[in-house]
Amino acid sequence: MKSIYTLILLIACLCSTSINAQDVYNRNETADVQHYVFGLSLNDDNNEITGEALITVDFKEGVKPFALDLIGKSGAYGMDLIGVSEADTKADYVYSGNKILITPTANGPTTRTFKVRYRGIPQRGLVIDTTKFGQRSFFGDNWPNLARHWLPCVDHPYDKATVEFRITAPDHYDVVATGKKIEESHLGNGFKLTSYSESAPVAMKVTTIGVTQFATKLLGMVGDIPVTAWVYPENRLDGFADYAVATKVLDYFVTHIGPYPFAKLANMQAKTQWGGLENAGTIAYFENSVTGKNTVEGLIAHEIAHQWFGNSATENSWNHVWLSEGFATYFAILYQEAVYGNDKRKEELLVDRKEILDYFAKNPSPIVDNSIKDPMKVLSINTYQKGGWVLNMLRHKLGDETFWKGIRAYYEAHKNANVMTVDFRQAMEAASGQELADFFEQWVFTKGQPELAWSWAFSKGTLEFSATQLQQHHTFKFPLDVGIVHNNEMTVTTVEIDKASATYQIKVGSKPDKVVLDPEVWLLFSEKQTQ
Image 1: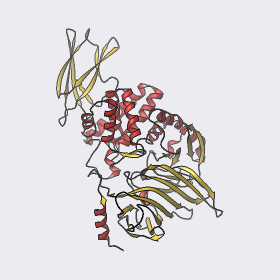
Image 2: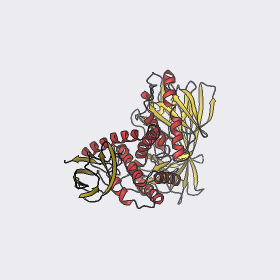
Image 3: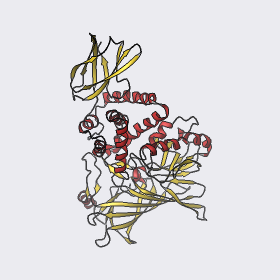
Image 4: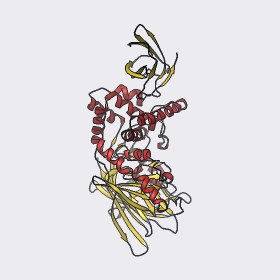
């Protein structure tokens, strides 16, 4: 066995840091995980799990040592590592600091499979508890980096892999997991083996299992994708009714973005720390999402949008998580706009705009915040609501046809892969023929938004509109829609704001009854009318 000092030195030398200094996860330099098979045994006597993981690794540039994450035993919680083998032979490994450092044999193929055997009680990641109705349950809740508490893996979204779960549990449980069900076998000893396999590569943050007593229903088919509900039997009819909208949501996104990337779409009532967790193909919704009153349609749309953005096209750095959360936020609004009309879009965006302004007053930071090192801290009003607002402004700038053209091209180019903000920018530039570096720099990488003091005056058929940007740290450049109202009818003129302060001449027939800024809710800004 190597010393702890040797382990730390090897990890530092053999694992590269993130492509962005702020994302501090040490990445394997040459090892690329291709496939996981997680064999897990669950029981009703205690909360200890027994695991056997088969991990297939491709060595891209020579066979070198690599690291896996697994939280070690500490007190009552954590995992005891039983052993690691390569080709049925004990592997050369060191386990310390919640890392398994494996040194493969020098000779052999560039693609290898390693077996990791372990057992213990997970403190997080796999939630072993009772449902709100008192039924014992097991739910995977990995986001952002909690898979390491119960699964040996590369617990960072940069390394995605296909996955299979083989769950052995008492046979009175129903089991759902990431992927398509490929086996359900009663073992004759009071236990049942249930296996699911997902052929699209996924990040560990969005893999899951759900094991409890479920009521299940096929809600419908969208193309060849089965859409199902997995809810507690005690509220089955309400759950089936609430989750039924998922078929309509899925159809909207397939039509507008592109083919659905995963084997199925299961909608699961679950014990989760989140309101919803976008696990690939097996979404978890908080227990009280089931009311029978269709109160979570927006949440369902948000989590289903993630299947394309975050799950398939996955951020390569935690600091670019707006490519997941901002997209899901705005695409949920786009779905609701399609169903309920433009007023619904404006209603949702006005709420979000107020939250963004309030958040900035206490947390003046950009969407991509390079100071954040902890993945648990990347989620904020910035990465959700402000990220969504960036897409709203980009849509207005480019027009609907070009916006959707770019979205489809972006997804097609990066499905099943990893992305950064520059990848999205380049896709939208290619679709529009416009240079968008300044747009992304000021809205994504610069903190804040315009704070406008404005006034207007009328003289001799001309409206003089004056606007001053009050913020000191940056002069924003943006189109501003000015609504001019006569006799309850509005005409809209767009002025290009590119200075800290300026006055614009707008020809009008008579003195307006009033002037309104941004009447259709396309601009993220705050305003102070000075007259």
